[in-house]
Image (cartoon, rainbow, N blue to C red; front, side, top):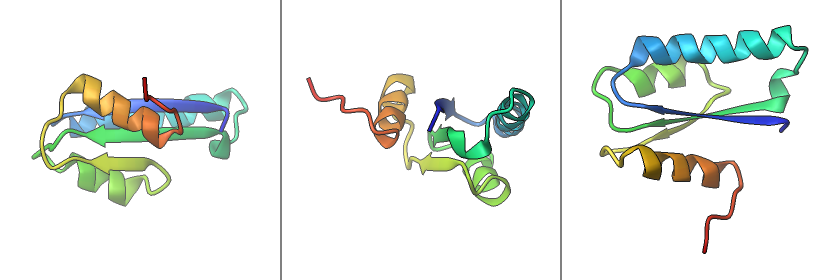
Length: 89
């Protein structure tokens, strides 16, 4: 992985779709291989089908679909752990 991108989402399915597409397009334009970019989406219990959209349209994206809204900070920490960061004090 050359770059890791964290997207925290709550009921913004269309904006999330656009963000993921933009990340892929930007990486391609910069000559960065898709394998070198890891996108982690943390969905904070959206009710608009956001998690399902990511799962169906972007299978290469790592999705953490939460059953409750854990908030922005906790969502970022979960994504950092998914990317391999050790957040223990």
